[in-house]
Length: 150
Image 1 (cartoon, rainbow, N blue to C red):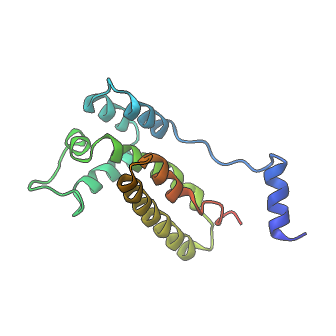
Image 2 (image 1 turned 45 degrees about the horizontal axis):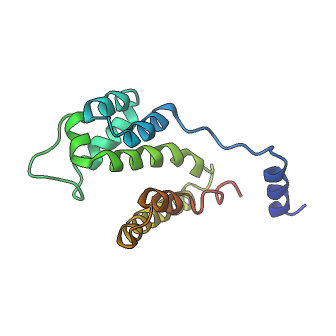
């Protein structure tokens, strides 16, 4: 049986399952949509995932977001980046393991870089068109998610 036909059978037969969204990413997405949420609550949730917290700190201190002073606390990083960017980082971190294919690390790294770049471009295009920016970001990030599986 051809690989594409086998994949289609698994998708239609519900025998193919994707990993669930990690708790912290889900909680951050919910909190970022809550109009009563503040940076303190967002930081509290973020502290539950040290790897994601490290990513947020690294991005906050990157050239793209860097300010005059280096951010040294998670709370400062959340304020510098804003809720939407923290949510996008959480989604990207949660989705990244889906792009794993042992033995094909170089190809997967290229695919991941392409997906991240596409998500950023899609987000900016959506912002210019005044349409759903978050939806465009997710579509860009996930548009080739099935390729490592295939």
